[in-house]
Image (tube, rainbow, N blue to C red; front, side, top):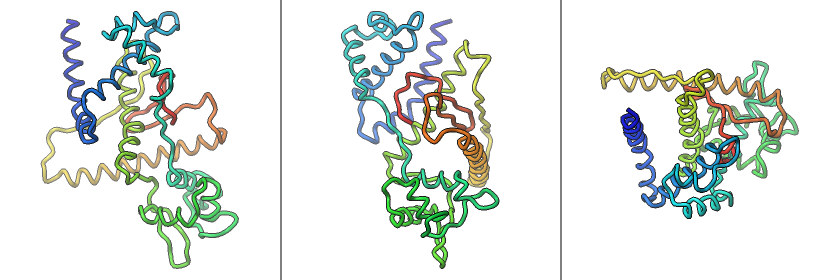
Length: 277
């Protein structure tokens, strides 16, 4: 029975790995490089998550669990402890500007929506928004880039209005990194958490709707309708998060953790996940 279960799990992972391998091959990453990454993850998780009485797993036990040699485990632990594998995902100045334009009272209209802003001015202007939250990016350069990507439009009086709430990077590598960290990782973390028997009483919400019987002629219309509805849902959750952000401190504290909703709800539970959100 156990062997049957293992086979089912491995077959499912072979399916999941197909799009992953497509991405890796597109970037010229072969098996040996990916295998090194997989081995590192095995050593990291087995060392930090499977210890006894809260202590890290010793090298010999990690070797037994993973099938790696003790020499290899020791090498990979040294690599992990060096911190060279920490993933850093910072918001871009454009993302921060759009977020603050939707979140800060100073830049909202009477209905709580992003206000139409004049370019110049000491307060409630695009320039003051960029000065506060755009780092060292000049307001003119920020305006030009936001217009280029279609996130804002400018009227004849030079006033700026938000057209798109979010920004999707044009650089393909940056786009891939963002998608893996902000979409794939949270979903797979939920799958891991929700299929662990000890978490049955506090499973994370995770939903999917699907059909195997939609005509080809109807699929473009279905796609448009789903896109519109998902955009509305994402905007409503973004408003919810913004409301609660206003209750907290400006800077991140030790007790803050990422929270995310796709068609699922995600809270970071892995204290050992190595990324800087």
